[in-house]
Each structure stands twice: as structure tokens, then as C-alpha cells.
Image 1 (cartoon, helix red, strand yellow):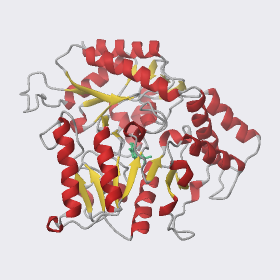
Image 2 (image 1 turned 30 degrees about the vertical axis):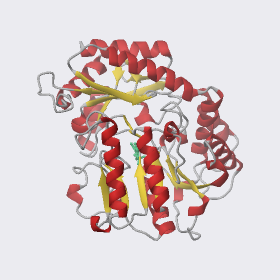
Image 3 (image 1 turned 180 degrees about the vertical axis):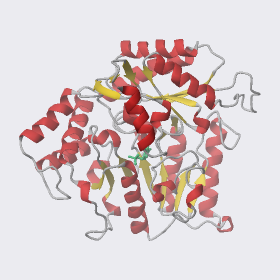
Image 4 (image 1 turned 180 degrees about the horizontal axis):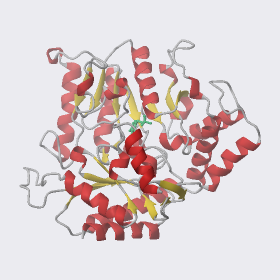
Length: 435
Ligand code: PMP
């Protein structure tokens, strides 16, 4: 029985468990965009394993690829040895890369998680530049290992741990509305770039030149915050001018979710390093780095890991990329995402602050309707109302996650296969919950 399972989970699993506190579900089945719990209740899954399930649950393409790999008796784990399946995975991924990247691309298989690959990206940048430090941004989320926590633009989770990676410099991530510099809009973008330029060029700023700048083109855990394209282009120009490695963390925003295969494509830039995980494994654990061959200064064995050769994940991930291409899922994510964005922005409620996002990575800020607006006209964020709204959605059969500052942003991360009519149901359920 579901309640007993939940009760045992609460008793036996770590106090660090997070999702079950807000989504008390014992899940029994997943099909497409739907999840069913052990009591038979059906939900639309707008969490999709934190954006991992681009094709939803049990898409025939991923299921068949996994079943075929099993039926063919493929070796399941192959370290970094060559296999035909891996060869095809790499070719399919390189074919997806925009601009001139594929012609210079190298790949490093990192293991199982986004954090694994971010760790490797930092090691690579340090090795290639001979420098030690990194620039990251307010609100950033790159994982929960000690190295990646060092890059987290949020103090609370890392404060109890004391010293982590030394020399991480944080800069404000420009937000058009809740600007950390209190400026907003274009002025906030200019100020952020100016700040970085000053830190890099003025010796009296006292900043040692970093190995890398790491950034999400759309900040996910921070609550679906798209980086302004002009700002990303400015970062590209600055990092190139100063010989700093630009790392784009596409773990959540990559693989079509924002309406392009890679979220940095909205800015028309070419990063030096791309970090990929989540959707790249088709629901199975896999993470990779794609980087400019000029950075390939690693010695043999300089980066390793047992689980770099998960053939089932490569089979499923190849299927995801093939469907992304053949069914133009990125274009569909853009049009269904725009439909969602417009419908959310149209909801007339004093609870709703900013609605933002790109494609099928959308967020709705929940604010205190009675709170005093700040200088930019934003009412205070209201995490407790956001969680109440999340519960009200769950009761109506809609799974949404909260995120961002004070957990006050409701996040929409459905599978990319969601159809327009299904999205209309999502909006209907959400509107009822808001009302
Ligand atoms: N980078 C980004 C942008 C992410 O959203 C996440 C996970 N939410 C990570 C890195 C870390 O990935 P993992 O949880 O697989 O370590």
C-alpha cells in the first residue's frame, strides 16, 4: 500500500531526501507524459526526472534500443573501450553540434551524473590553462559533489562543509526583472559584463586570472532563468579575449528542451566545453564532456571512471538524439513551450509574478500579493504559497516542482513529446489550482 511504502521510506531513507517531502507519491507506472501511483491515480509528469526524460516514460524508441542491446548480448559496461554502439552514439551527438564545433570536437565520457561531468570540465580547464580558479554565477547549480558545490551560487548547502575548491569567484547572473545589481534590463547586462572585464583587466581588482567561466544558458534549479543572449555573447567575447575556457553546462537545458538542440544556440555562440547529462542517456545514467581539441592536454589516464561505458545508456541516448532530429522535437518544444508561456502569462492572479523560460523549461514566480513591491516593481517571493500551489496541483493530477530563491518558482519541465492539447490540460489544472 502506498502510504506504508511512504512511511517506510521516511523511516529508512536519508533525511537529505527532497522530492518525496513535496511529492508524497509511491510511483507504480510511467507511460509517455503520465505517471501512475500505487493507488491508481494518474498524473501528468511535468518534472520528468528533473528534465531527464526528453521522450517521456517508455518511449518505443528508447525501449526498443535497450531491448535490442540486451537481446544482442552486448557487453553492458565497457569502461572506455571501443564498441559499435559507442561509435554511433558519438557520431549522432557530433552531428547535432551546431556551427563549427563538430569539426574540432573531442568527447570525454565522464560516468553517470551531471556533477561527474562538471568535475571533469573543471579539471580539463585547469590542466589546459595551467590556472586554478573559476568564475561562476549567482543562482548557479552544477551538482552536489564538493567540487561542484563550490560552484553553487547559493550559500546554504555548502556553508556547513567549510573549505571546498579554492578561488571560485561569483558574479551576478543578469536577470531582467529581479536583477541582483538592482538595475534590471539592458543596464544589468552591461554592468555584469563590465564587472567581469574590470576584474580581469584591472590588477588593482586583485583577481587572479581564472581557468574557466562556467555558466548555464538557462539556469534550471534557479527557476528557469534564461541568460540574455547579448550577455552570453559578451561572456564569449571576454573569455576569448582573455584566453579563459568558457564552459556551458547544458545538463538540464540541453537536448532540445529550450527549443534548440543546445540552449547556447539561442545566443549564437560556440563554447569551448559543453557539459551534457540527463537526457543524453535516455533515462539511464550517462554524462559526457564535448570540448575543443585544442584543450586536449590530458595525459592518458588523467581522467577515468568505472561507469564510462554504459552501453544501455548509449543505446537509449542515441535513440533520443535520433528522435530529436527526425521528429524535430526541439521545434515542438519551442512551439508548445511558447503556448505554455503565453497561457501562464495570461493568468490573471495577484499570486503570479514573473513568468519566464525558454521552450519547455518554464517557471512561474509566486509572490505575496500583499507584499511591498521593490524598486523594479517585484512583489516579495512567497515560497510557502508556492508549495501550497504545488500541493493543489498534485491533488488535481499535475506534478510540478518548485525551485529558485525561497523555492518560490513553480517549474514546468515536461517531456518534450508533450502535445499542445495535453499542455492545455496542464494549464487548465494549474489555473484551477491558482484559483
Ligand atoms: N548542472 C545542471 C545545470 C543541473 O541542472 C544539474 C542537476 N539538476 C547538474 C548539473 C547536476 O547533475 P547531477 O544531479 O546528475 O549530478
